[in-house]
Every structure is written in structure tokens, then in C-alpha cells.
Image (cartoon, rainbow, N blue to C red; front, side):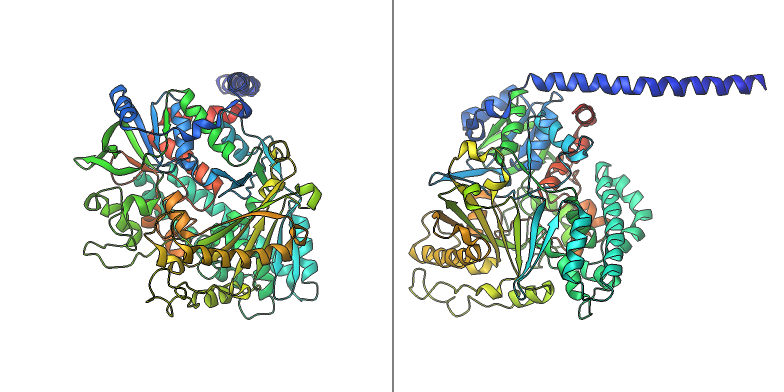
Length: 635
């Protein structure tokens, strides 16, 4: 009895000692991390020129001679995150970017005296909360130099164009629910349906966290665990959004169908209509904004600046205008890349941030892949099915395309009364019908045989009521540092979905030299999108002094997409249907030495790309992810 009593006393003493030591240990980690971060140049001290360092054959040869541990193909957020974390763990990292500025979708451009953000419109994640995991991940990747500006409490306005009904979605989800119920106050059963929706939303988030977390493990372990997880995934993860809405009593054709349409208004964030989009993805995206929306202070390029600075500060290199033509393989293993005719070898790993389609190939752009198709076929077939004889279409295609309108205004947001919020102007609340009508549009067949620059050769443009959705937002209103950098000005962006085939006529022409016909076609899109801007922000009329239109061809040139896609692979149920699909998009590929990162690894979005960078780092180096975890704890 005495022995047992002594054992319990020892255990109790150990528990008390641990409880006392843990806060001290956390405090020490925080002091060390904050001390190191305080010595790092702040965002304002970082020279923007580091985003535009060109690669030359001489530089590549010199780096190869010095030795490179990890080569990252592409400078999107996933690639920069992995490169930053690995470089801080002592690896010599080289990032190679085909565009003339690093950052991928987080880069900005300046023209006509205005600054525009091209791919980041808002993110969530509770970045103003001390314990927010997202805030800590951003801090670990950027050496704590990123700051965030919170958007208006009503960060999104859901607008039904057929009824002129506007529903604000608030940083407080209870307020959002109240606004939604007020909009459907005369609809019996709305409150109970909304309750069921949130229950399903919770399950969707939980299974998505598990599924995505499995990608931190080696692929063989992912397969083993998936045997037990698959039934849960199929019940709560991969049913379509439309299927789950039906479970909640908001199915198509029912009395609550419009309520369901209002709740999934932001399907444009992942670019797939409810009948084809998986439920887990919608759950993750919609709950992501609980607590509000945020924008990087200093513009989206501040993300790339802080990460590129971290890479170069630790002995790495980020070169732009350096397209990779091939991932070099030896005995089936990735050992380096070929760029500008120079072979650069990687001692540890090659990480592709070029997307699954560019890395392993696609049926609608054959021959463009970076990996030898014979070697990469096993990885590709996991997602797309076997296509050794060619000709078969991909099971998972490219995400939707968009046309962007960038607008410069001659007055500040404060003077014009523009708030830090977005407007989702929807055709109506039947998103599947809206997308079906959109997909049936034929704007090309009548002009397809006409020669380029024929006065009647350009496709027509749709009417505003033909578009399933229009997105409008102001980066300048969301950025707390904008007034300092651009006094007396503001900038807005309008986005609409389009089909790549509408622009195929000019495929193969050169950027900024596609002919008068193309300019006229862009001008027609400009007028259509200005119509939307003036409707939702009438105060901007008379103050537009700059406009520019970007098309799917712009995306192909600047972001190296294959069909102008803005979200990489399409976010359909098939993309996530089963363990083969999940392993196909695993950070660790079937090709030894080759890893993937970026939004194709997880799903659409800036935060997804950031997270993929951490997952890829974990698969490349346990040491690097351990250091990253310590920095997260201390941030």
C-alpha cells in the first residue's frame, strides 16, 4: 500500500512540476521568437526590388556550383511558404518564377498611377485573435512582419439581382443568421432549416480538417487510415452542396430553396455551382469568415515581400523571368530542373508550385507538363484515370475563368463613401440553373470561321442577366496603409465568370499586341462591367479615370495557367472522391524527390496555399516543420 501511495505522490509531483514548467517554457519560446523577429527588417524597410530579381544563365550556373538543397518551381504563396520555412531551417533554397515579379496571385501591378491587387480579395481566419492558428502560421512564414486590416463588419453583401434583395453577412455569425432570417421572415420552417444547415456545416468542417490533416503523413499511411475514415468522408465530406441543402429541407424546387441559395451565395469563392461542389469545401469556406474578413496592410504584395526577404536573408534565391522547362529525372527520381538551358541540381527535393496540370499534364493542353509523361503517368492516373493511349478527357478539368476589370478612381474611398466590403451580385438564388444557362451560351459558333481582325469576327458578349454572378470589391478600402501610399485615390475590381473558348480566337497572339479586334472585345466587356459597378456603387460614376481589362489569356501569360483558370483544378466532388484522388494531390508525389504545393494540394484560396506550404515542408523536412511549429508557438 505504501508503494502504491508513493507512486501516486510521485505522479502528482510530476504533474504539478509539468504544469508549472510548461508556461515558463512557452514564455521562453515566445521571448526567443519575438527577439529574433524584432531584428528582422520591417515590411516598410524591405526593398520592393527583391520581387523582381531576374535569373540569368550565369546566376543559375553559379548557384548550381555553390550547391542547392531545394528548388521550388513557381513563386505562388505555397511555394514561397515552403521556401521560407525550409530556408529558416538551414536549407539552401532556390525559387524560380516565369513571370517578371514574384508572388503568384499575391503580386500587384501598377499602371496609370494606380496599384492593383490581382488575386487576393479577402481572407478570414480570425487574424485579430491572439490564439488564431492562421495568424500564427502567417507570422511563422513572414518572420512576424505581416499586419492585417480588418474589413467592415458586414464584409459581404449577398445581392439577388432578380429581386433586388440584399443580405449583409456579418463578422458575427449570429448577426448573419438574423439578417438571413429577416430576409425570409415569411417563409415557414426557415429557422429550423438554418439550424440543420449549421449542424451539417460543423460536420463538414470537422471531416475536412481530418482529411486535409492526413496529408501531413506519408502517402502509405494516408491510405491505411483512409480505410477507416472513408465512410465518414462520404457521408459528411463529398456529398454535393445541393445534396446537403436537400437534407436540410432546402432542396431545389422546395419552399426553402431560395434560403439555401442565399446561404451558399459565396460559391464563387470556389467557382463551382452547388450541384457539383463538395460539401466539406463549402463548409470550410463559409465558416472561414466567422470573425470577419481581413486584408494585408500594405497590399497583397506585402506577403511576397516578407517571404522573399526571409528566403534571401537565409542564403536563398528567388529569380523571376526564369521559366522551368523540365523537371530533371534520373532513374525515376527528381534531381533538379532545367531553366534557360541550365540544369540546376537539388540535393534534397524539387517542389512544384506550378499546379497539378502543369506538373503532370492535362488532356486539353498536351505536351506542356514538366515531368516526363511516362514517369508522371502513375501520379496523374490517380486523379484523372489512365490515359496511356491519349485522347481521353480529364475527369477533373480546369476551374472556371474570369474577366477582371481594374478601376482607378480620382477620389479616396472616404470621400466616395466606399466601404471595405464585397458585393456578390447573383443572377438569383438558383445557382445551378444560372450556371446551366451560362454554360449553354454560344457566343462563338457564328464567328468561328472568320479571320482574325475581321470586323465581324469577335464573339459577342453576354448580357448582364446572362451572368450567374458578379463580384465587386475595393482593395484600397480594405488596406489600412493605402491612403499613405496613394493619397486622394482609390481602386476597385469587378470580376465576372467567362468561358475560355470565348477567347480562343486570340490564343497564340502576343500579350499587348493581340490586335484591334481583341481591344474592341475587351472594351465591350469593360462597358458591361462598369454597368455593374455603377449599379452597386453609384458614387463612383464620374470619378473613373483608369480602367484595364484582364482576360483568361492574361492569366495564361502572367500565371502560366493552361485555359485561363483562376483556381487551378476544378473543385468538384470527383476531385476529392476517394483515397486515390486524395493521394494524387498529396504533397509527396509518387516520383521520389518530387513534391507539390499550392492550392491544388488542398483547395482554392490564399489560406489553402499557405497551409499547403506547411504540409509540403513537413513532408520534405521534419526539422523545418519543427522549427516552424516553435515559431508559431512563439508568435
